[in-house]
Amino acid sequence: MSPPASGQQRPELLVQPPGPRSVELAAVHGAVSAPMGPPERPGGIVLSRGEGANVWDVDGNRYVDLAAGFGALLLGHGHPAVVSAVQRQSEQLLLALGDVFPADAKVELLERLTALYPEPAQGIIAQSGSDAVSAALKTALLATGRPGVIAFGGAYHGLGYGPMAACGLRESYREPFAAQVGRHVRFVPYPWSPVLLAETLQLVHAELVQGTAGAVLVEPILGRGGVVVPPPEFLPELARLTREHSALLIADEIWTGLGRCGEMARSFSSCLPDLICFGKGLGGGLPLSAVIGRREVMQAWQRPNEVVHTATFAGAPLACRAALATLDVLEHEQLPERALSLGVELEQRLVTTLGPRGFGVRGAGLMLGIDLGPRPGAAATLMGALLRRGYLTTTGGGQREVLVLTPPLVIDSELLLDFPLALSAAIDEAGL
Ligand SMILES: Cc1ncc(COP(=O)(O)O)c(C=O)c1O
Image 1 (cartoon, rainbow, N blue to C red):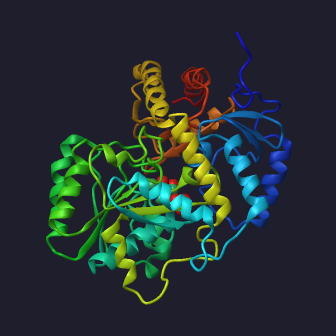
Image 2 (cartoon, rainbow, N blue to C red; image 1 turned 120 degrees about the vertical axis):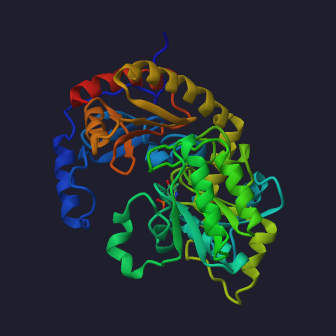
Image 3 (cartoon, protein in one colour; image 1 turned 45 degrees about the vertical axis):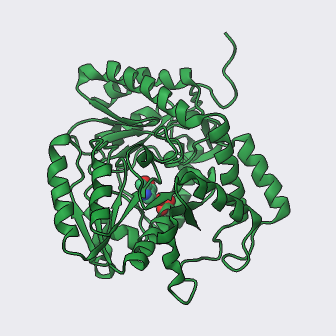
């Protein structure tokens, strides 16, 4: 048997994490960073290097990265195509002049992204998921003249003021800033089971008939909300309802898009949203996002007599080149298709391993969630146990009860399919 490729190796722990260097640096971080995050956050390691599906901490421990930058490292750490594109661009042009004089790389990227949309489209390049969702919400207001937004319980769209107002995942995101958060968002329950679909659609309809909502903002699969897959009729029915009431459907594909769930946009298999947000994996690890949409909708940006959504680093060429390289690799190596087939295999193995324990496994492609049931914080505990076995994972769900797996789409299949065994041992260790 040939040795595993570099960047595709099993965990190797030199010291029990967190090792001494991590502890030291985490203490410095604690002193200089504003204090944030739940006190129960597991681990406490500090990362220093990554390659492929492996990442190393400052103590030299090697992990298998099944979190992949919250799903953003579609090609894993340091993919040669991305690294060389960034190197070449850095010798050429680091920054253009935003919306005044764009970089050639930005022009090429917009051409590539709008070509993903099956009808004539235009786009806006942004810098984070939150920024792309803000741009989409602004587009909807400009295009419809209606400020209302219909969003869903359990949803996460980023923490800028516009997207935050539409985060149904936890009240606690909005609560400290409530005095500055707009009151234009109406929440409707996300249909996490087929039984709830009719009620959800009826509530959306009831909001739309009031005529104040210009947008319905939806994740095709709830990501941070716990990898919740809605019934297949959900998106097409939403599209129909929004169209009927002259509102716009915004698909937040920041997590589900660009191949992670098996297609360039998860929504495409069942409907055509008016606007689609991409982020996370788009920049190959660099901060970049975009909203693309129907050309006639995007034309609404002509209306203000000013450039009203821009930034110093808008369309930064380094990130645009990284994105172009990422899109090339996704396409040439057929990674969306790989995500789909490998995801099915992993899901089957997880079901076989975890089924007898009564835990649910769900998701699409290489975005899978393991629901540990009504145990608040259980996934955070399990995440800690997995870290001690050399696996990086994340958590989701309103009470951090879902273990979330979003490995790089290039992960070695054997390495990934070994994971359920480690998971089983970690569940025992965690006493779940
Ligand atoms: C579906 C979705 N939308 C938007 C965002 C926000 O992206 P960012 O953290 O880059 O602002 C996230 C982040 O997790 C997300 O999962």
